[in-house]
Image (cartoon, rainbow, N blue to C red; front, top):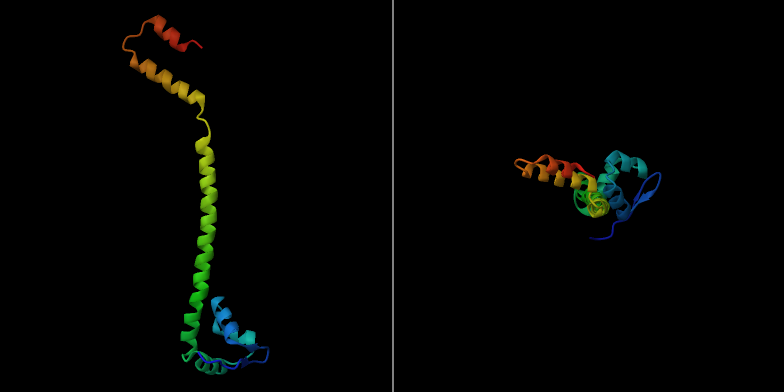
Length: 128
């Protein structure tokens, strides 16, 4: 696109880059007007010269950059969290199982596998 002169407001001049940054930050029209110090009519005329489209359409289009950045940041954070969760999961998997539980399970299997245990066989199972 052709270069467009900056929009001169009471507070500051706004370039295309500044407008695109404000749009990516999801700024509303009144916020942009207050930041630059201009009227909506001047901003709309400047936007039509700079982007060859109405202010609302240009703002909607440029806001998508910010939404994509938000999604990208969330995805990056999710990847970092997934790594942490996987590390914790692996830590618990590598822990040795509680030997008391395993002994109790094997004792229960032995008891239930006996059909008619004699008193000596039961006494041998319960001895420690």
